[in-house]
Structure formats: structure tokens, C-alpha cells
Length: 407
Image (cartoon, rainbow, N blue to C red; front, side, top):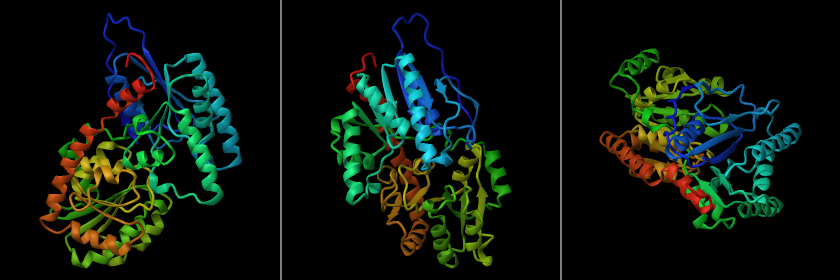
């Protein structure tokens, strides 16, 4: 995704207070992370950020025309995401952790925010920071619905995760499912703060009308039709096959309804083959779009986001859909469902892997009258969530809790 970000404002002249130095250690550099760091840098006075990236991001889908001043530092020879799980990965990532620590020791941050704990470099950094008395914060998208370990794995996980809790001065969670996850391992609610991973809201709904018309023309999205939208990578966990099957089951009853699939992945050919020939004109495979304004144009052209994932740690796509005023169909295990998808109001929330329930939800959500009410409710729910869960406010509160002064 090619992303252009606004330049950060310059610091006010005449300010003599030393900068507040906060290092973020992350394994990847997504548009959502970049725009979050931009917000922190812009909206917290005197904040200086260093963003240390532990994976090789040279082959990322996301290419930034202009990288803002968020102190991005990468490490030559770092592992690629495709290596995760291999022996070479664990060895290499552990070594990268040592290089991260050397960088932090030289920079001397006032606080360290470690974005995840399930990777050698992250765990090594977290323990180093805590051992040296540096205020240490953990920022994760952990989800209580994934906490399914049993037997010896449960015993090991209990020991490891509880030790992580003890090493953190504050934990930044995205939402309710994250708070439930960490509470189960002994994290006190007074040390947990809502810092959701969010889209760049100001861009949603801002696609120029001429671009929206061009997207509609290119993908044969004709006026007067209703559309379900799947916006996801085409991999098994996203359950796009279930969305296709559910749509095919109701297509005759909803002659004015189409299905748009936005995204790409290894299952594309298989998924295209699932569509009966009589419905191929009504199931649009739009591919991966590398411009956010084009993605936003699809939101404007569609009515219902269908996200039947069998697992999703958070799910920024739900935040985007709610902010764009779409009705939502999703599953109980998606991390952001409690915040964005109020069952029976703006959304229909079903259990994962229930194709019949998914078909019924598609029918119910597209009932005339009900669809319009659900879409309007999404806008209200999004506005309330954004006001109550501002990530900048959450980070500032967390830093204060961790003992950082001058925030």
C-alpha cells in the first residue's frame, strides 16, 4: 500500500524543556503503526520517538512515499516474516534483540514500549529494559478468545505470561478482549490502558467523487445495487470461502445484491472456483489495492462489511467499516467486535464456522429499512468509540502510571 503522510509540525521556538524520549520496538511497520506514531509525535508536546523495527521490511506491501519523523531504525540482516517458526528465525531474531538493546542503551530513552512479547527480540528487549529500571510498557493486540492452551502448554504459558506482566509497568490494550486476556494473567486494571490500533479516520469517506466513479466503472459496480464487502487477505483464517458460500446460498432471494472481495492471497484461484458460473457477474474479485483512497472508495460503494474470520487478534477493518457507515457481519472471536459491532444494532455477530448463521445474517442485514438503520448506527458507535478510546490519551496516561515525568 503506497502511503503518503502529512509532515509533522516543527517544534515551537523558545521551548527549553528536554525532549521526552520514548522508544517503540515493533516487528513490522504497517500504515496503522506509522499513523499512530505520527499522532503521538504530533499531539504529545516535546515527544521524541524512536521506532525500532526487528523484521526485514524491504519486501513489505506497504511503500511510503515520505516517511515522517518517527525515528525509524531497521537492522540489516534481520529475518523476514516468512521465516517465522523456523530455527533460523529464533536464532536470528534473538541476535536482532541484542542490536536493539545496544541502540537503546546508546539513545537512553525515558520509556520503552515493546509491541508484542511472543518473539525473541521483543522478549529480550522487555527484560533488558525492566532490569535497568527503565519504565517499560507492553502494547499488544492479544485477544482472550485465542487463549486456548491446555495441559503442559498451559502451564508453560501461565509461567511465561505472568512473568511478562511482572516485567511491565503498564500494558496497552486495544479493547475489551485484550483487557480480559491480561487480567487472566494477573494484570491489574489500574495498569491497563486503552490504546487501540486504529485507521486514519480523516481519510475515510474523503475519496474524491471522481475517484469513486472511476472505481465503480473499473469493477462494474453499477448504480442501484446493494453490496456486501469482504476486505481481507485471501488466507484460510479470514474464512472468505464461507462468505462466498453464504452469499451463493441467498443470491436468488436477493437479486439486487452483489459480493465484492477486496484483497489478494494464496487462495484466490480456489475461491474464484467456488463461485457458480451463474453468479460470476455478481461476485467481484477486486484484488489488493495499494492506495488507501481506493480502499475508501470501495467502502463508499458498499453497504455491509462481511468479516467471518475464524480468528482475528484485533481487526482494524471493523473500525474502518464502522467509521464509513457500513453495517457489519462478523464473528464472536474477532478482537474488535465488542467495540465496533453491537449485535442487533449496527451488526450481526455470529459464531465462527457457522455457514447457516452467516447466510441468515446476510439476509437479515440486507432487509430494506433495517440496512439503513444499521448503517446509521455504525456511524454513531464509531464516534462514541473514538471519543472514549483515544490512543494518545491512553499512551499519556500509561506513561504517567509508569512514572514518566513531563508527559
